[in-house]
Image 1: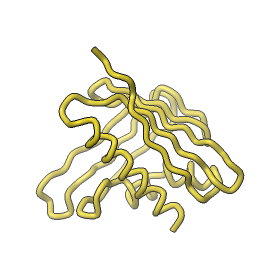
Image 2: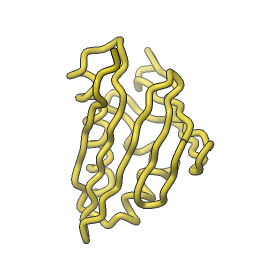
Image 3: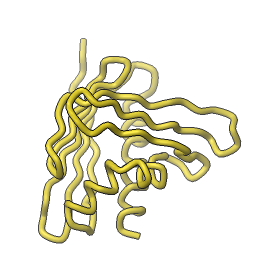
Length: 137
């Protein structure tokens, strides 16, 4: 039985134009796309259109482990919404809600079956928190 999608969110103290740019541009993705400071994102590619591919390399800084996170976009509404399907068939949506000089970023994603729900929420929230810190910095 498929469970309800999981959600994480953060209010970013920046306008939606900057938030969208920092969230989608590869030169910015590599600066925030990791859950823990012992990890990094050495490369990212982003073909920002329906049918386009997203790919980010995520690695432990000590080289002990790494993987490519890949997805294909099903919907791209600039500065409003990204919807994508991950390699394993799970789906996710990222909403950008403009609130004047702030932007609420809401990510909803299908859980995977390998890790506990709390760990999955924690990981996605931690990456979003890194994004917030980078964007506001």
